[in-house]
Length: 400
Ligand SMILES: C[S@@+](CC[C@H](N)C(=O)[O-])C[C@H]1O[C@@H](n2cnc3c(N)ncnc32)[C@H](O)[C@@H]1O
Image 1 (tube, rainbow, N blue to C red):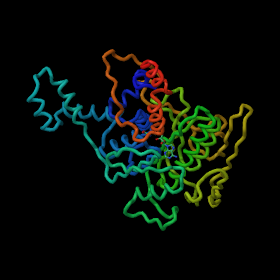
Image 2 (image 1 turned 180 degrees about the horizontal axis):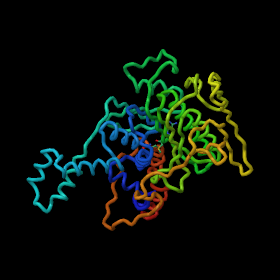
Image 3 (image 1 turned 30 degrees about the horizontal axis):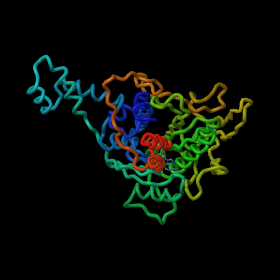
Image 4 (image 1 turned 180 degrees about the vertical axis):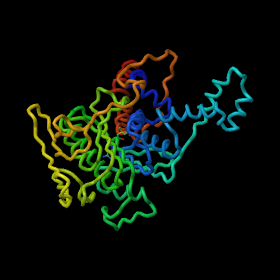
């Protein structure tokens, strides 16, 4: 697809270039944060499948620079404006205002000044590690790594990147603790268009991300990952619910309604007692979780069962232990992951086509891919003389 056709069709693609994000995906994370307050109290984060790096950009700007976006940014701006008008603005701001403008301009001037001096609240001890198969251009305060998240050798690399001074490779994974507040994964395979295959490969990426998260998350930590909503996705939610207190599915407004993509937002990491995360023995098909101790006689035993309904859907019954009344379907037995659409309704609709002014200039991408998988194909096409060699053939014909 040409740059201009994408420009016309996709508001977030254009907006990302205008606002300096490396990819439109930045808005997905910002809209998820808007809904779930993902970054509250967070300082240590792992960003999996991070290239070209727009999610890491969001992390860097929010955690390291202390910028605020969305509703929080707007509220901050309103507060600054109020403080300024009521006399709380700094001397420097006032002086500039007095020097420049006449009485009637004050409103606009205040707005401009307040807008140009947002209060930044950087956090202490921030650590961000970003991993991808593709190389990533550097970002402020982000440690980038080129690695495969499905490969066991990635975990020691990640642990070392998180704590370069204290990391001890001689300790088994289970004995090392590098608590991380948040693990995010926007991993996606190169889609083939064959839905079942794409969903399967995507689920493998998700498993890899979850296994990495289980090894580094601190109790109470959060895990956010892209999923494709396929037939058996209920099973996945139920599995996540075993290690997280809250599991919700969210569809940000910047994610096209026509796509099967959504995000699981898991909060309150609470592995079952006795569970030791390890990449030497990762969770996967056939993994048996340890039996919870039966010492607490007051708690009813948790019995997870599943059955295939006539319509093919898999119904999971998590027993009667769920404490979140809202998550329970009528009858109180089957647990369903709540589904939320997020992002303000005033935000752009990612499926709509917006009218563009005639004199609009199409901007270049903020960070062109460093080594895209299609690079070789482009080189070969160029050698062949353009699209499928047609240009070359035509040029030769024209010359003869
Ligand atoms: C949709 S992009 C991520 C966009 C990113 N969140 C951003 O905001 O810029 C999906 C990424 O997943 C990466 N990926 C796919 N399989 C991977 C794997 N096994 N290990 C690491 N990264 C992988 C791809 O290289 C690609 O960069």
